[in-house]
Image (cartoon, rainbow, N blue to C red; front, side, top):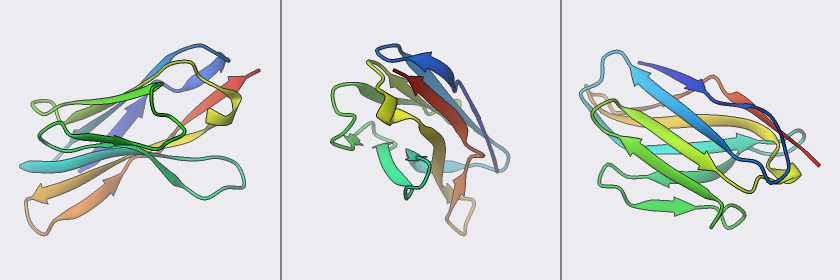
Length: 118
């Protein structure tokens, strides 16, 4: 299974970006799809997650600004990021929980850099 992320870049504060992560390969069933981020010198943190059924959860720091969505037919997850702040600067990673084929496993993307200037 491979994950291909896209959409990162350099933007000014208050701008918007949308990240995408497409899973391909031997996939029969995917459960949760998530976005994490890691800022320089900090630990990786969960940004948002979405279940197969569409239930979502967000880090408090991004609630109201970021929206996670997914296309189950295409095994793709998106992260719409609005009102970006300099503190959102980080490498963003997608994480996909593959249920089948067994054994279940989680797969990480390569990361995409988001830089927000003030």
